[in-house]
Amino acid sequence: MFECEHISVELVGDKGAFRAVSDVSVCAQECEIVDIVGPSGAGKSTFLHALALLIERTSGTLKLDDKGAESFSPQEWRKLVALVQQKPVLLEGTIEDNLRFPWSLKLYKNIQPPSAAELDALMNRAGLHDIALTRLVSQLSVGQQARVAFMRTLITHPRILLLDEVDAALDAQSTRFIGELTSDFAREGGIVLRIRHKLDDNRAAKRLVFNAGVAHLEMIERGETRD
Image (cartoon, rainbow, N blue to C red; front, side, top):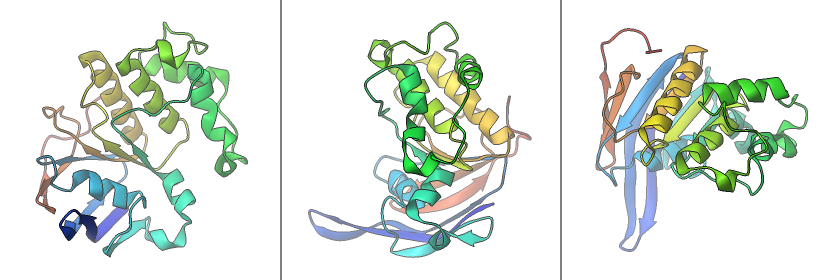
């Protein structure tokens, strides 16, 4: 279970300090997708960045399986609670170079890297079965690059995905494959909080609606997460 209780964030702008997120709470269970919606500037991205410990909370608590965020180092927390940004950030080199990049970091030194078979299987699930792992990422379309960036996060096996409009600027095909990968992640026991501006894709169980830094939770009655 992922519990976010009474989260507030204060930022400093041109006119001084202001409350970007005010007393927002949400609880998400395993196998659950929560959509975060609302107008631009309402505090959605700030909220996700606070959940990933990328910006400091003014107040509020974060818990994963009843264990507070303060019990983890920021690096260990972000290994479990992974933020994926809208604009993919990829390294120069091949698809395989990018997918294996996390294992060049100290955080993953004691974790077995994915096999070639695992990478091939993930490429197939992402609809990239006709593209070699040796293809340079600079030769990919924007939608294909977004899928590679998304796969790079999935292959590290986080517990929670925080998705900041990852499909906002993508073509229909890439949007569909990222949606399917997201549903697969949730179905396998993961938790997803995702910011979306597109039409409802029938995958989320809850909707957190933001407006001017405050938010309320809505339940969506439609049964299990869609395949």
